[in-house]
Image (cartoon, rainbow, N blue to C red):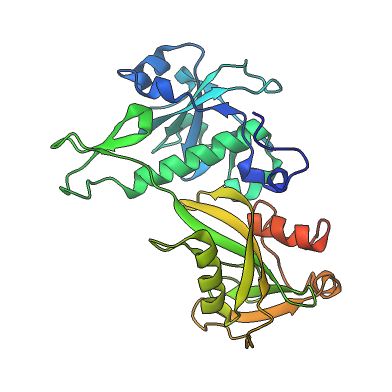
Length: 313
């Protein structure tokens, strides 16, 4: 697809890559999943406990329908448009969520956080899409209107309330993540209460209802750090299906007209530090940065001017 230019910031984002035609028209066909499972060209992407079956340490295993045990859930992901993958262009791919790995239990399985950056464009897109929609199904088993159990519809892209026929559509939670710099071009990094004490990353937060992305940048940075920022500039976005976020990357500058005191909120952010490029490089080994699959790492390396190797995964 022509969306991602090779020299753009998007090209740095492992989980924003794709070579999949999501083929939305097929979702509307009656019993689309049944027809796909009868098609000998269809390939299955098995998922088990959040991991995907691997063919090699850096590629997904897309297997014939007959190779997969009975699945709890099937979702049609679309058709491969890759010209460099083993499967022909146009191959339909269906994700299958297994409750029991069966004879595949001893096979190799991969975690998206760990291998996302190692996969091809096609496989990165498939795995990210599959994990995002499957996580949504797991969190929406009941109708928010009636409380009754819902069933999958439209080849796995809706859930249906059987009492009203109402369709429930997938949701994605928008979150901003920001590379904040001061007048000396130092980068602000913080340590989250949920992480190891030596892990530092950019500040981030969810967009609230009725709020623009830019307003969310200004609010979240102030809430978490006490710093007033100006000039939010959008860089690009990356899906982050852990479980259901879309990370929207920004840069912002400290407002020179307002005196700000660096103040961790004490609940989510426990420590904040400014880094020059030399200080960040010299701190590697002492601190850990976000993993290479994350948009945070891409924004940090964009500011730094090149790759950083801290051994993080």
